[in-house]
Amino acid sequence: MGMMQEFKTFAMRGNVVDMAVGIIVGGAFGKIVSSFVADVIMPPIGLLIGGIDFSNLAITIKQAAGDAAAVTLNYGKFIQTVVDFIIIAFAIFMAIKGMNALKKKEEVVPAAPPPPSKEEILLTEIRDALRQK
Image (tube, rainbow, N blue to C red; front, side):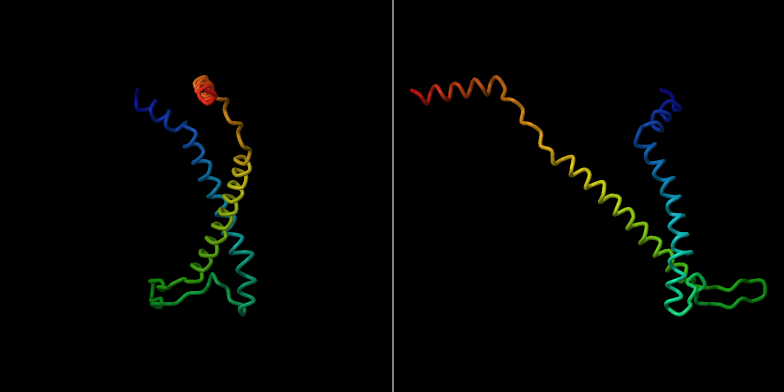
């Protein structure tokens, strides 16, 4: 089998396609959550704390000099990223919890036990015959 055929077989397997769709949807979901955190959640939190804009919070390590930009630690953006992560992790947790609940409902239905095999029936008859003697 040629390399192109092997690659086509690999790429068209269900798991690879599912993973690709998950990555694309996850990337879009991440952008939505980032916007939600930066534009909806953080402004009211900053207002409650005293009008702080988290995206501008930084510690200047070295002032700008000439053409060289200032060296800063942007901890406000880090705080926003942490909040993004917490929201995404919670959303994934809730989705997996929902899927597990659906799985448990499917597993609750007990399957009927299989009928006894011919050997089991024969052995039961032999056992009963020996007991009667």
